[in-house]
Length: 149
Image 1 (spheres, rainbow, N blue to C red):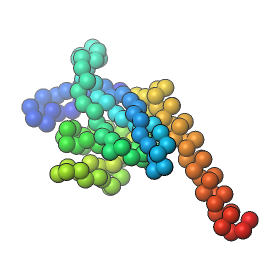
Image 2 (image 1 turned 30 degrees about the vertical axis):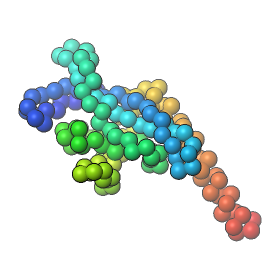
Image 3 (image 1 turned 120 degrees about the vertical axis):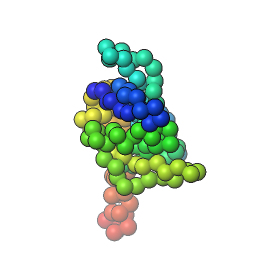
Image 4 (image 1 turned 45 degrees about the vertical axis):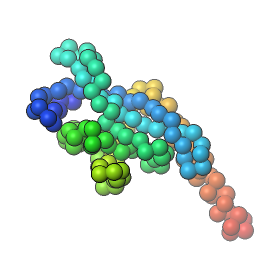
């Protein structure tokens, strides 16, 4: 999958190839978790990667409990809204403010992440699903205890 964006400062057309990367983060109890990052590599006319162009996503150190979501680094990637027209993600309407910048939260389409992420996305997805199943079963047990069951 390739994107063509208009470079914000020069107006040049640039071809980018996205890929999934993972990073370590922690949940609210300090458990180590995997975070989802999208890296954009610049490619030439033959689709050979020439260099890393940008990291589209930004982490604030929090584990995001919405699957396939990431905050978008609009501070360093002012072209990011152009990617929404490619239907790879949807803006959730939520954002995080840090300093003078506002970072929107996007939810990426699973088929897009599978295509660009391969084994890395599979690892993220499996860990996320296992974590959420565990959290849900613990909540159910607590509710049963509260109800005297």
